[in-house]
Every structure is written in C-alpha cells, then in structure tokens.
Amino acid sequence: MSDIERPRYIPVLLLDRQRRLVKTVAFGERTYVGDPFNVIRLFNEKEVDELCILDIDAGRDGYEIDHGFVAELAGECFMPLAYGGGLRDVRQCAPLVRNGVEKFVLGAGTTNPALIGALAGVYGSSSVVACVDYRGGHAFVDGGQRDTGLSPLALAKAAVAAGAGEVIIQSIERDGARTGMDLAMIGTVAAELPVPVIALGGAGEVAHLAEAIDAGAAAAASGSTFSFIGRLRAVLVTYPEDLTDKTGGAP
Amino acid sequence: MIRIVDYGVGNIASLVNMFGHLGFDAVPTDDAAAIARADHLVLPGVGAFDHAMRQLAARDLVAPLHDAAARGAHMLGVCLGMQLLGRSSEEGKLPGLGLIDAVTVRLPAIGRDGKKLSVPNIGWHMLEKPRMSPLLDNATRPERFYFVHSYHMICAEPNDVAGTILRGGDQVTVAVSRDTLHGVQFHPEKSHRHGMSLLEAFARL
Image (cartoon, rainbow over all chains, first blue to last red; front, side, top):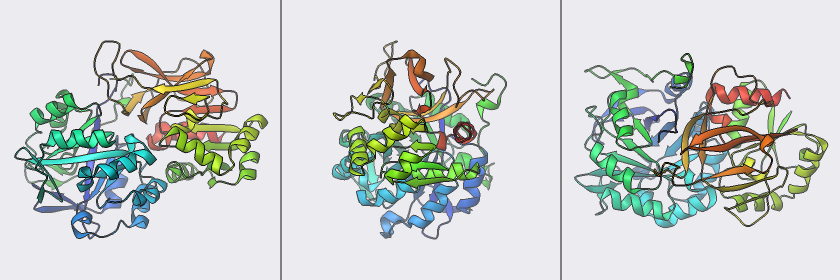
C-alpha cells in the first residue's frame, strides 16, 4: 500500500433507530455520541479521508431506509461516504447513489451472493463493501446475533467472489474496547484477499490504526478513536491533521 | 450554468452540493437540447462502462455530447465519465465517446516490484502534474484526491495527460486535458478543498 501516500483512516458513525449517533461496546452497551449533523460537520472541517455511517438497528428492526434523512446527511459530506444498515435489495441503492452515497456496506447481505452480484453489476464492485463481523473464529450477522457457521475469512472470500470490492473485518469482542486491533486476523485476511481490507474494532488511538495498516489493512476504521478521549471516554470528535497542510506536503 | 449529465449513473447530488457550496449553479439534466447547447458540462459516472454507454444511448445523449464538444463546450468527465471520453475500455465491448484518443484498461494487480496491489484502488493519492493544465494550475500546495477505480486510461497522445499517480512503481494517468475537454479519474466532489479548487477552476473556464 506504499503508493497510497496516506493510510485511510475512517471514522465509523453508528446511527440508532432514533437517529442518534451512539458508540457500542461488544455490539451491546451504547453511549450517546452526538447529533449526526453536528458530528458530520466537524469531520468535514477536519477533512476526513472517508466516513462510514451504519444504521445498527435497521437490519434487526426491519425498517426502511429514510432516503430524505440520508440525503441530508450526505449533503454535508464533501468526503467519500459509505452507508450501511438495512440493505437487502438492489432497488434501495439508486436513491442512495443519487443522494451522494458511493459505497454500500452489507451486513447480513454479506451472506447473500445474489445481492452482492446484483449491486456489483449495476454500481461496480468498488461500491460494494462486505462487513464481516466475527467473534470466537466465527462470522456473525444481524448485529452479532446469528452465527453464519463460517470463518471470517471464508465469508469474506465468498463475498469477494460474489463481487464485493472491499471488506471490513470487524472484531465484535474488541468493539469499543480501545485496547488495539486484532492484527493477526487483519494480516491473515489482507494477505488472502485481492481487494482492500478495512480493519475495524478495538482501536482507541491513531497508533492502533497505524498498526492495522502495518499488518496489511488498506484502511483502518474506528468509532472510539475519533469519538472519545481519555480513560473516562469523554466525547470529543477528533481526527489527525491533514498531512498536505504540512510544509512540503507529502509525508 | 453548469449542466450535469443525468443519465442514471453517478453521484449527481455530491457534484450539485459541491458546486452549490462554491456558489455555482449546477443543474442535472438529461435533456438533449440543453446538453448540446451547454457551456459547461459535467459527465459523472460510476459502475460498468457498457452499462453507462447504454444509458447514454437510451437517452439519445451521445450525439448531443459530440455536438457540445464540437462547439467547444467545457466538458469534465469524472471517474467513469472520464473513461467514457475515450475510445474504448477493456471492461466492456461498446465504443466510448471517442472524444479523447485513449483506451481504458484494468489496473494491474501486481506492481513492478512484484508486490500485490489491491484492485479496486481505493484511497487518497497525491497528484503529480506532468504539465500545466487549466484545472490543476492554480494549486500551489500539494493536492490529494480520492480514488475508487478498477480501470485507468492510457492516452495515445502524451500531451493529453494532465495528472498522474504513482502506483506499484507505475505512473497511472488520472487526469486528462485536451483543449476544452477534461477528465479526472478521481472524485473532486469527494476531495474536500482539493476538489473544490478543481471544480471552481472548471466553473470559471
């Protein structure tokens, strides 16, 4: 990845059913982080590499994507935007694209090769991100509730074979732990897949994200790193400085 | 007024948003007459090459785009829209618009040093500028842009190349300019102030 001059650091924003931003621990306990529009505006000012917004209740509750709301969110984004949560049909994506979402993040849909293939056929593989959540060596869907019986690598490979252009590999156990990422798993998956791998889960500081990049990830994503500061997890939206602002620009 | 060619393929809202933020009117249209008459045309696009060409053809927009180019309209192809300006693509069988003498090929999966390269190429790259060009001149500091692509353009005429990135030891053409025709492989509408500066330069042409 050395030619990509700056590793991609991706804040992940979790929306709940009340359209609030929250941060979870091990896919459970939730902490309120803020109003999505305020937080997106802050990340915009900080010129983040990319944003990933996931509605973590849409899949399980089964409600429809509110395209008006997504359009408002995307309208604030002058950076790449990935959106996930409740995607089950290729027809949901035309309005998402029109409103400025360029990547679709599939959760339960990761186990649906027909859906992945249909999305890749219309929007291209690079628009389809498979999010593989795992714990104890197994990939889980539906917010960590349902065991697919597959290893994370097997599910990721199947998703890529079906047409996914990017894979998020997320440790459920490390979610919100802020102690570091699962470098062994990240390294294994990144070495085996032909597509970019995004590490997620466990980071609490930028150094953790850098470790994941060193382990082979093309990008490192985090909720906690960019939302919390200090041992007591005070909410503070932060992001590393833009390298192009430094004298001479290139790192 | 800037016309954004709206043919069902691409991130129209992001372009409209950014032009609006910069204080320019950018209006999506699939109206052949409006496109043929436009001063400033943006051709967006994501997805498959043939799908996009079929969508243009289905709306009878191929001839109007040629008319606009022949009249000297300022045209900016973005991402797949850049590739459509060329003659053909390895990704598909249909001819492109043929406005720029270039072909599009798949990104290599192995670098010159033998190392694996991810395809699609997703992420930020610093742009290298082999020559002066109208959209990229005005930036004094290094510019980074956001890329999402599996294919890239190869120009028959080296002077058409306005920007490159280094990937796996190879220079990859990611920006072209020929007279009033421009194309960028990256997404200026998703590249913060770097993209704003480019789109503003285009709007002021």
